Length: 307
Image (cartoon, rainbow, N blue to C red; front, side, top):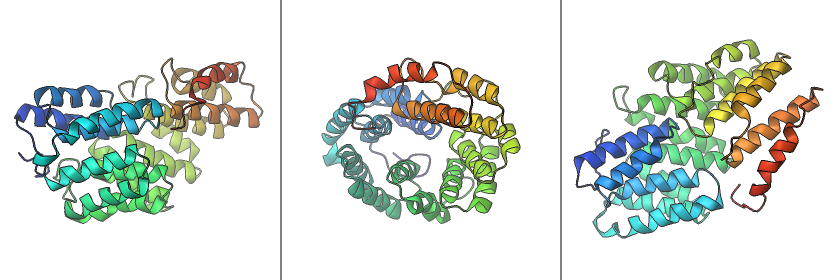
């Protein structure tokens, strides 16, 4: 069968393919429903290897050894399907396996190979950009979406997400003038694209446009409750804008409401929280016992080498 971008997928049940498409869309928007939708696809067709690669990406992107075993489990199950998979799917499986083994050079190369042959594979664009970012390769963060853009049209499903990824890549390379209009266009096309919202926030921060940044992120507290840990990072950006406007009370309110990690947290949430509290203290603002409470949560991550 063929997906929304006319790519061949080894799948037996149309309902499984539709659930997988929905899972990819949720993954692109950092929605919590990405995991259950991927599992729904596998419930309909346990042999859908790309859904298992997506689950592995969800686990591995959390940068935790605790979840790596879950990713490997999914990849082992997908491996049993290898003989009947197409070449693109096999490359996805190999790239995810390399990621799980911390062989990032191989993983990046395999995702680039996918995009060289199948430039409309938006899942490959996203995982390549994500991995390139954590590897510190800003040029590849930009090149991942920019390199495939000529093979896309605005009517192709996912074009707005590609724009959001391109905006972030341009920003990471310091091309703020080009990044902002692309990011704003992505948000206009899809207001739910949190990555594009984040890219524009980066531009406004880097250009010192703190009042405008506050307006850009002036959303209701529940705006992104259905998203993964990235939501706390975007609220962290909102708190930075408030700090730079010398509004410490607003910063602490954002910290307590949206940045402070919950009971079940990931390292990026601890990172956001610690860096915000440090900034407050360096600016001369008391933070109460928030550091002590954060330290209690951080203890559980000391022995996790995946962070």
